[in-house]
Every structure is written in structure tokens, then in C-alpha cells.
Image 1: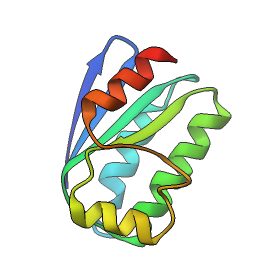
Image 2: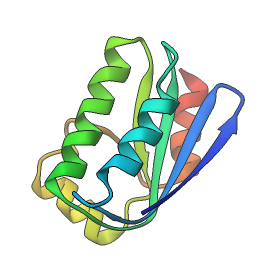
Image 3: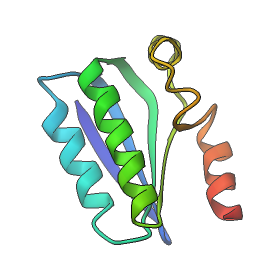
Image 4: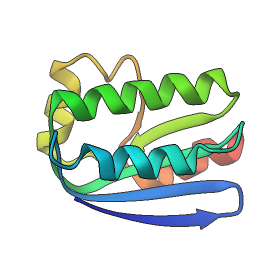
Length: 113
């Protein structure tokens, strides 16, 4: 798993590439934790190059979203590949998390709020 961080004013975008599973969870979890270090943080995880997500990855995304909400921030996902989107749908996360079809759609949403 490779994580590349981008900063756009007060918005942090984490580009995730590879498999998100038990072997790579620490890499992603640490990147999200660092991005959410400040209260009110705005973080988008771009899943465009992520090929797989396990239940551990789903759990980390859920906890990240809840943590952001509790701190007055936002956490969203964007550009999931078809495999990752299917997993998110099966797990019911489509109804729980902010998920956008594209990065530009996510960025526009964050700019409005």
C-alpha cells in the first residue's frame, strides 16, 4: 500500500494505491491519523488506485469518519474502483460514509461546507 498526501488549503487528500488489508492497515491508519490530527480537519481518501479492501480497511474508514464527525471535521472517500465499490456496497457503507464518484465531486462538496 502506498499513500501519497496532498494539501489544498485546509483540505487533505490521501491517494491510496494497492491493497488495504491486515498487512497494510498501519500505513493507512497512520496517514489518516496524521491527517486528522487537528480538530475540524477535512480529509478525502482517493481510492482510485486501490485494488482491494478487507474488513479491517472498512473498520478503519468507519472509525475515521466517526472521529472526524466528533471533532467537527469531515472524512470522505472518492473514486472507488469497481471492486472496492462493490465491497463498500455489500458492507452497507454506501449509506454510512460520504462516498463520491470522483475526486472533483468530493472537492466541490468540501468547498461548499
